[in-house]
Image (cartoon, rainbow, N blue to C red; front, side):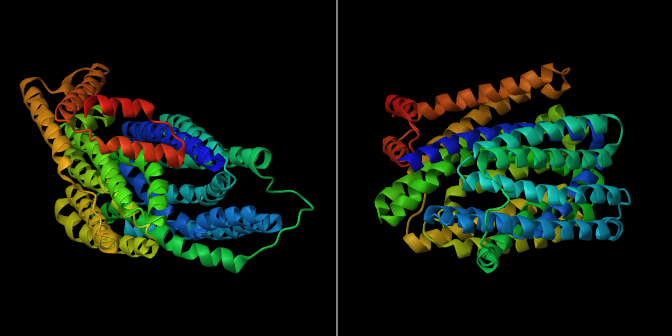
Length: 517
């Protein structure tokens, strides 16, 4: 029970931190878009994408290995091996991240000139290269907070302190006119600050990394042998997240790359419902499968997927209908050119995040090797589609490539899970949130067509109007959803199972369900 309370408390911290981080990251993107303009934002985004991939090589996949072996050795009381895992990973990652930084500094100019034909990208890549060891070691410290069950320090440092430092430094340097180079330098300075703060918390509050006289037993082969397959998964997932930006930079223009890189983070807000539920669903699903309670597993699988679907669909449709207004109001009128890309990405991410439970089910049923194969297949498809579609369709082509490859990724997992356990997450109950969403969006389409465009109003009135439209749309959807009795009797039982497994009390939610089923 004590472990479950730790998990539940940690899940709450993580969710709050994730939500705050998401907002701060979005404000950061708004700041960059408005001060840099599409072309410089595009150059900066290219730099982030390239250096992000090189950083993965600097980390060599050791994060999950540290998390695994620290937990294992701690449970056995093998303190010397715990210290060996901690220090061994830090030593290895310090060496590999410095090599990765040096390599990035050497290839910065050839990459900028030959691949992207952007001379100004050279300085951006060189400055961002400085962040590689900073990010790698800070991330290692953050993994230690998880391993030692002090995840609140990860939330504080990574999600809040680092993001605030990044915002403040970027505003200062970009406002002074240093452009994309200033934004790159701000990331390096924020990374150095985050590293210093994280080291303080680790050393004082979590685990004394540097403690002279204490013996360490190293097991390099075991640590690296466990970690390298996870490095492959992380690498191909990063390819999935960055290949559209890199492809646009090579095959299209920096201007369009900048436009695309405000549409993507906007569409990724659809991740919120999935993130909230998956942290609770996974331990429940794992326990039910381990005890072979397949009927209960099927009910939980269907219910949680339907909950995510019911929350994500209306948000995706709103993003499609108001795509132009969202980009114009938040980032500036020039970014309205990304409306079509935002609409496509919103629909694509709606499908992807609604089926997060499907892809996640491969873990409880012990099909983790398929996770790697699926990620590789989706990444390869994404690269091929980007090469084929971007030259003729630009940012719309990049959005179609991402949407198609993400759908393919989810489809693979669906058939694999169904083949393994003969359970799927769909039911007739899906028509209720679907009908409620489409009625709401038709009403607001009619309303939008009969009034002046809200992005024509003065700031900040147009921001208030956009938020008001969003709140009103969700309220109409909620009323329709309840009127169609979208909540199901089995939802109460699923909430009880989650409460029992995680310790998170959901009495308020259960009372609402009882009232409206």
